[in-house]
Image (cartoon, rainbow, N blue to C red; front, side, top):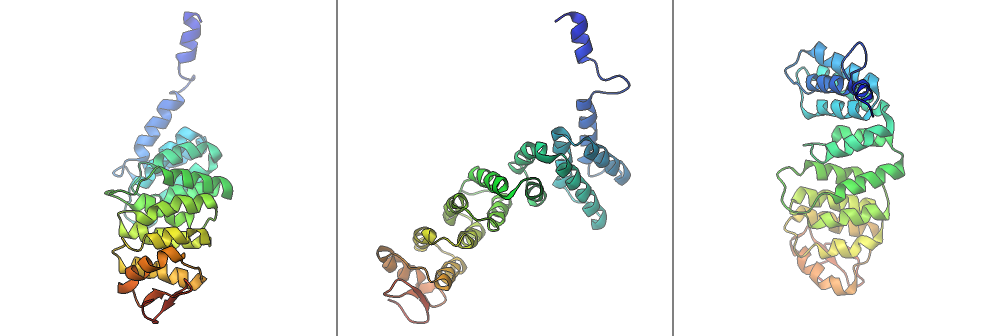
Length: 253
């Protein structure tokens, strides 16, 4: 390649700055909580019109803060959301990357539901959840929101991915993991649900497990009944009967 070819390739488009620099400049305004509202709105609209992955990545930054009044905050976020969605599937990689660092996933999850069909959305959410562990985290909101979101989607991959969080160190995460596990309506989850009980310290989680098992009429395996009964002694009167079915108020054994 000659020197003039290189110069032609590296020069910005005639009449303006390069696309990358334009996106970067607009992204800075979108992410600036202290910017004037009309400047931020103009930047959001300009990025939305681009319908590209880079523009979508820039628009995602608007979801990292809130402003007053709330009606303006909602308007800006709605515009950013629509702009990201308009980028189509090109927006998925930056949305996924954003999810791995975000404090909350409310808006990016809405984008994935809007852009992807159910099968692709399920696969993406499962892959995202697989990136989280069950150890202590300063902020559990992202994985908790993923677990809740998966409660609306059924599949063996969902069940397997969520069961791991039945033993999360955070009680709220475990509670939602129980709910999502039951939402799968798959009796294959019984061993995982029952095995969590002996180590479970939360009475509300134990009650949630017992209520779910009883309501569905699922059978506790014989080898797990004694340990389950021991664990349920501080529950709201739940126990496992001789037939392996959960019951309430019938006493132990």
